[in-house]
Structure formats: C-alpha cells, structure tokens
Length: 527
Image 1 (spheres, one colour):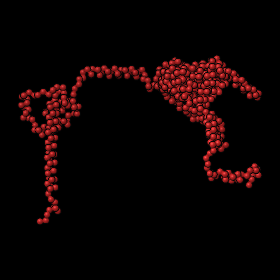
Image 2 (cartoon, rainbow, N blue to C red):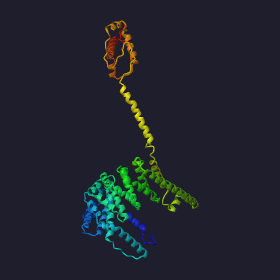
Image 3 (cartoon, rainbow, N blue to C red):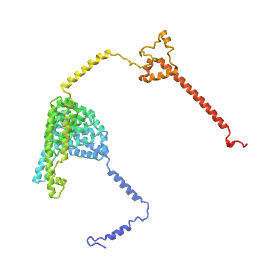
Image 4 (cartoon, one colour):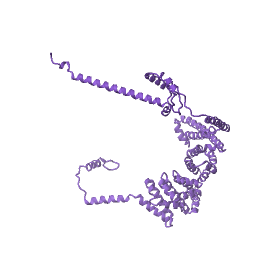
C-alpha cells in the first residue's frame, strides 16, 4: 500500500529487492569488458594513493626553489604544510628525512634574513589590530600579506616540523647537530624576536634537540647556554619562562650544571624573583615546573649552598610561598563551602556547583604545590649534615689521641702465640723453635714413668680437647712428632678394623654357603 505523503510503495520495493537479491542466480564468468573495467578502476584507485616519500621530495624541491628566489613565499608555506601533514600521518617517515636530504633546506629556512625576522612580529601584530578594527566596523576588506608576515609563518612551520622530528629521535638529533643546527637554533633564540610565539617555538625546538643528546647538551653549556636560560626565566612571558625552567630542570637533573655555573649565572636569584610572581593558580604546570627546578638544585648542590647566604634567602622565599598557598587554600575551601550550601538549595551536588561557577583551579592542584614547597623546605635543612666548628675540633682531637695511644703499643707489641694447656707428655715450646731432645739423664729418668699405650691415647685425647683450634700450619709448628705418632696410630687402627671386617665377612659367607648346601627338612628322603 502506498504512503499518502511520499507516493512510494515501500512494501512493494522491499519485496522486489528481496526477490532479485536472494543470491540464487547462477554464477558465470565475467566478460572481458567487465574485467578491463575492474582492472582500470583498481589502477585508478592505486594512483590516487599518495607515496609519502615522493611527495616529500617534490615539496623539498619547492622549498629549495624558494631559497633560490625562484618561487613565492606562499608556495613555500603550502609545501611546508604538506610536509607537516605527512610527518603527522606517517611517524616512521621522520627517520628518513636525513636520507631524503630534507634537513638541510629546513635549517637554511631558519637562517633567513634577520631583519625580516625582527620585523615579522610587529607586522603580524599590526595586522591583527587591523583585523579587529575591521570586525568592529564590519567592513569586509582583504589584507595583503607582507613579506615579513610570510617569513614569520615559514619560520614557525619550520620550527614545528623540526621539533616533531627531533623529539626522542637520536638519529635525527645527531644529523641536525652535524649540520650545525645547534648554532642556528641558539642564535634564533638569542636574538629574541619581538614575536613571543616564535621565541617560545624556537626554545621548544632547541629543547627537543638537546634532550638526551649528550654532545649537544655539553656544547650548549660551553656556549653559555645557561645564561640564555636564566635570561628567559627573568622575562615577562610565562610560556617562555616555563620552557626555560623545563630545560634547565632537565640539565640540572642530569648533573651537567655545576654549582659554580649556578653561582655565576645567578640562577637562584632568578628563581627567587620568579616564585613570588606565580599568583595565577590556573597555570598549575608552570608553578610545578619552577618548584621542581628548585628541588633539583637543592638535591644536587645543597651542601655547597649551605656555605653561602643564598640558602637563607631561598628558604625565606619558599616560606613566603608556603604561606601564600596556605592562604589561597583557605580561601578556596571557604568558596567551596559557600557553593555547597547554595547548591543544596538548588538541589545540586558540590561538583556540579563548582562546574557551574567555572572556577579555574581546584584544591588538589594547590595541595600538590604545597607538597612540593614542603619538600623544598625539607631539603634546605642541612644543619645535621654539616658538623659545627666545635664538633670538628673535638673529632680532630679524638683522632690525634687515638693515634698517639696506638703508636707506642704497635712498637712494643710483638706477635705472640697464646700458651697451651699441655700435659707432661707434651712439653711447652716456642712455635718458631724446633723440638729439642732432652738431656740423656732426663731421658733415663723419664723412661720408667712413661704410661702404657692405652693410657697414652686417653691422655692425648684429653689434651686435644683442652687445646684451642689453631690453623693447620700453627699446629704443625707446635708439635709435629706427636702428630706423626697420632697419624700412625690412627692408620694402624683403621687397618685393624679393615682386617676384622674382612674376616667377619668371609666367615659369614662360609656359613651362608653351608646353609644353602644342606638340604631342607622337606627335601630330606623319608627314613
């Protein structure tokens, strides 16, 4: 039945589709025309698929033409946009940029005319102001991009490409360093262009080149790179300060910055100036990065800091920061209580009330900063690690007295062996002297008093239990003849035991043979 609104018989169309698409039609081989059509369609589909390597080669050709003044800046911007898209779509392509000779043109773009680079920020700012005025006046006008604005866009896209390519990629980092990329980026950051966005992007790209690439890090610090970072920390741009603090924290954590460099560049003074200015609780990451940098400096150099006045001033700054955070936390709690009470009237949960008020910060972020400040304050307490002058003098006196007491004792003391509790059969003798035979008169007197062999063995065993355990070499020096006697007696006893065991086993075997040969009672013939 047809519907009155659209005039289409949907049930009939449904039955017709089921009838002619049930899959019961016989299969047949495709015609040549159909095969040619499908082959052509497949080839066209593969032609539409791009080859990223070939596309990058084509775009790098456009960039080289721009560097040779053969194409316009707009074409170069389009080529860089295509390269950036390919790197995002094919991450493995970043490892092949060195083989494709794409790094050198990118670094040449960063070495463009510095006058144009300096004017790019001001021209872009003027263009933004003019656009705002046009929007207010609602006059549709098209502004012509100046060459300075084009240069700004080219530099920004080039820095974005290099940052994404070099991050956590040691091969590209090494290739860029060999091409002199460190000097180019260092000069770009050092010149401090008027555009804050370009300056932040340049420092970010420099950080991607330095991280976890030790040769570049050492070269950067030898070129007074820490002075550049301290200058960035003292600037008025929060993003620029955050990037500088992050890179400086990495270098301090790696142990590449000595205390002398920190003292020469004034890093601690810059941090003391920075911490009180962090009044914006919405920028949690920046505040945590700055506090983590302070913690890393204290962990590495707090012993050296304790010998200077910088530790006391840093402790005072951290204490002030802790008090300010405590006040902010109390204020935040009062706001939450007020919102909770108002939410109860509107039948809302506290979380929903906070979302409706759009509070830019939360209590957990403030508590996290409090923990970092408390950790830094704990690291400033180094009195227990450094002994006082009185303790040092007392320790020196004790060492001298112990040395004076030990020296005469070492001179008078000679190595002596302890006396042994031996019986009359074992005369006491020096361990270093050979056993001397007694005089003939004493031998004749001692002969009738010698005990019987059994008694002698018992007496020797008793004396052995009384003797202390000495090493074998000392025992050999004490009484070698007695040891030989004991060894012979033990050998004789063991031989006797062996003979008795053999004879016993032989008799047992004979008895077993006799028993086996004699007939059993049930085997005997009847009588």
